[in-house]
Amino acid sequence: MKMPKEVPAEMIACCGINCLACSANLANKCTTCHSPVEKQKRASCNNCKIRNCAVEKGNHWCFECDDFPCDKTKSLFKRYQKIYHLDLAKDGLEAKNNLPSFLEAVKIRYTCSVCGGVIDLHHQKCSECNHQLTDY
Image 1 (cartoon, rainbow, N blue to C red):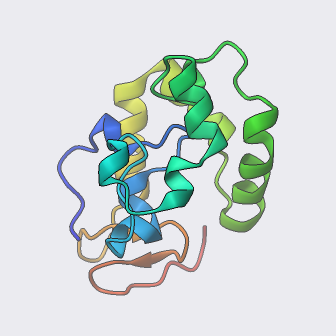
Image 2: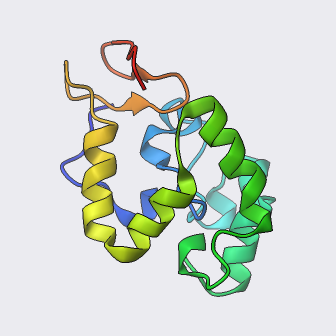
């Protein structure tokens, strides 16, 4: 998959993960958590306590909540920081301050410098040319 010219805001999950760069989405096993329930391919998306909390509060993303980051996001954020070197809390605050700038930053972050494909955030590998990132 090639990176689109712009990352649509709905491709940012409630928790802040870039769905375009998610390995489940790249394998066509998942749609964004903003998809209608009947279009969800994974039960884990429909049962996500973070997504459900945002929806219940009428928010599109967690960072719109006054309690962000909170206890519901703590475990996921810690895991993504440790395993994928991705600071979802920092990303959320950046998105809250300037969503268009954040969307441009994630586009740049997850675009393969070799072919313009999408970098899988979970495997640090291009979805098009399989270029493996070594420093992340």
